[in-house]
Structure formats: structure tokens, C-alpha cells
Length: 106
Image (cartoon, rainbow, N blue to C red; front, side, top):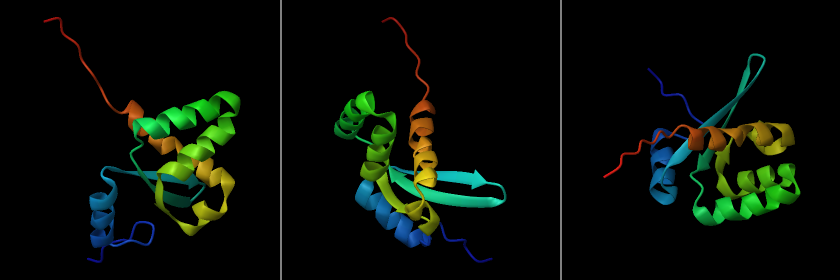
């Protein structure tokens, strides 16, 4: 069985990107029957702080800044279409929401 490429990358190339960037997030945007993929690196505090400051003035610019600072690789369609970029970067926000925490008094 042939492995399917993600954003045109082989498994070995994706592993190389993981080694370079750390945790990677795969975002998928669906429009009708079409799927578009983008790979993001996990944002650090500096990126979150900077994009949060930009978002206070313009949510679109803040979202675009998050995309620009975290994108590692994307399908060509994502690279060319602003709407796909805005939707794809939502994967980073969903990733952040995927963590669960618990607390306990000691």
C-alpha cells in the first residue's frame, strides 16, 4: 500500500520537520468534496503574545500573523488563498483547546 503524501511531503520529510520545529499540528479545511491541508508548528509564548497584541487592533491581521509565524508547509491552494489560510490557522486554536487540565489542592 502506497503512503499518501501530506502537503506533498513524505513521512521522512515530516519527521525531519518535527526534528526541526518540534510538535507539528495538521490542519484540514474542507470545502465541499475538497480537502486542503496545512502543517503548523506549535506557537511559543513570544508568538502568542505578539499575535495577541496585533489581534487587539485587528482580528484578521492577528490571525494572519499567527498563520505567518506558525506555518511550516501547506497545500499550494492554501498558500494562494487568503480564506483557506484564515480557516487553516483555526487548527492551531483548536489544538490549544484540545488540552485538558485538572487541579488538586495539596
